[in-house]
Amino acid sequence: MKELNIPFKVVCYQEEELEPADRQLIEAARQATYHSYAPYSHFSVGAAARLANGQLVSGSNQENAAYPSGLCAERTTLFYANSQYPDVAIETLAIAARNEQGEFVSRPIAPCGACRQVMLESEARQGKPLRLLLCGTEGICEIKQASHLLPLSFDASSMKTE
Ligand code: THU
Image (cartoon, rainbow, N blue to C red; front, side):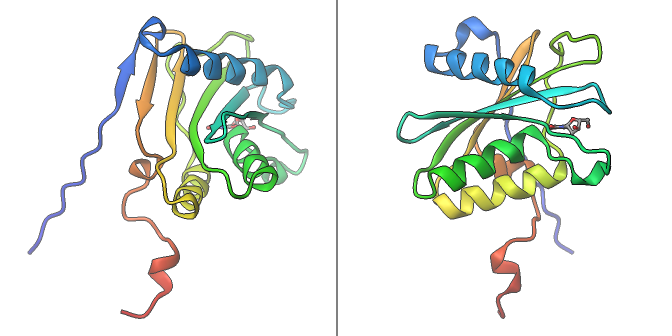
């Protein structure tokens, strides 16, 4: 018998403790929530990515009457970043959300499973960690490497013969 213990660290900050560049990114993620199209869930998510060339790109959730055709803010942003700047690494992705009342959530939201899988691919592709900042009004949680959120994952190496 072999037991695996897979720990990972989440560090939570008060916003004032963060570097100005991170605070700017968080603000961009918050602003992106106002471009969300969420007539079904009324839950507006925004994401903003800082790229290795200093460029900021942002995106929001885009829903559809055929529900599964919609897309989360994280994937909208990652796909946009990777399609506009295919050779530039994504350093940090900030994620913010507003609830049905239009208020920013107090407890940060964590990305869904499908977004975690896409983050994993972006990380593998760029060969560098993709850092996450999950934003709540009560605090900001930092995850240094997105793939930490998806242990025991399926990736390109899973299809290789041993
Ligand atoms: N959503 C995101 O955009 N990101 C997340 O991390 C969680 C959920 C969106 C999908 C859907 O438009 C709405 O939020 C409610 O699930």
